[in-house]
Image (cartoon, rainbow, N blue to C red; front, side, top):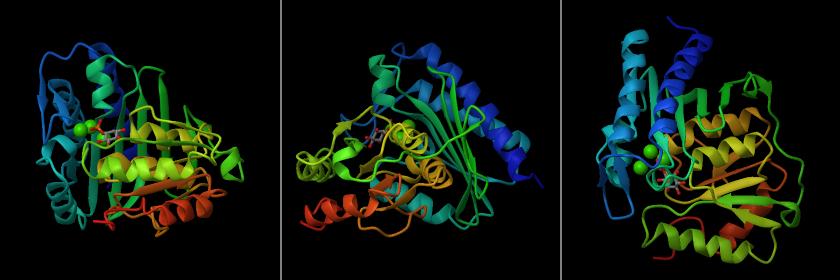
Amino acid sequence: MNSRQELEQIAIRAAKEAGCLIRQKCGRAARMELKASEYDLVTEVDKACEEIVRRHVAEHCPTHQILGEEGVAPGAEASAKALAESREAEFLWIIDPIDGTTNFVHGLPYSVVSIGIAHRGEVVVGVIYDAFRDELFTARLGEGAYLNGERMTVSEEATLPQALLATGFPVDVRRARAINMRGMNALASTVRNFRAVGSAAMHLAYVAAGRLTGFWEADLNAWDLSAGSLLVQEAGGRVTDTRGTDYDLGVRHIVATNGRVHEELVKVLVESQATGYETE
Ligand code: IPD
Ligand code: CA
Ligand code: CA
Ligand code: CA
């Protein structure tokens, strides 16, 4: 039986090996395929990175289950079904082999490897690795969050006018992007500013590191969120869905903040109907 510390070390080695490949191949993928739509991309490098992580898990934790983005059929229903089926596993590795594939395809160096490890449905280890900056973000449940071994804490901003918020533009262009735009519109005249680097996991890691005040986005999946949500919570922040219900692996519309601006942000999202698909 591996300790959480051992599991974290296995995840780190896997994330670093995959990250190395991401750095080498950024902007040089040989084959780009479309998944659910023209906006949903996958390359041979996404698949190779997922294989790297799967190999480490199979070698060191052969009884553990794996939920990897590239092992699941595209689309919200398929991902929800895959999660439901695997959720009760004793140990479940939740892998986003490249978070930021669109950046990767375009040669924009903002992509990370994200690995969450859940024990009976609760995330207990989170590892996010940014190979371009050699930044390793790690957390174990109840033991704090770290950037390259240094303890991280969320930022101090206490109001939305002081807040630097990130969001993203999901691959579902018809519905989820519209939801995010409603949120942006409602917040535009209030917040200090917005950022969007194109990787949900990186946004979450940056909230944990105190570089961003908060992050919200609709229509994400467990592999985008599992590691980063633990990082934010362990760094002293708060993670809920867009209506303010506490994070669990089934959450798809996410709000993660330093805690201080959380209620104010959720209130604006609720009032602007930027919380899900309720206006259809
Ligand atoms: C995407 C990124 C992006 C977010 C999309 C995700 P992928 O993940 O996290 O920031 O806006 O909704 O699908 O496909 O690059 O792993
Ligand atoms: Ca993807
Ligand atoms: Ca992702
Ligand atoms: Ca991905």
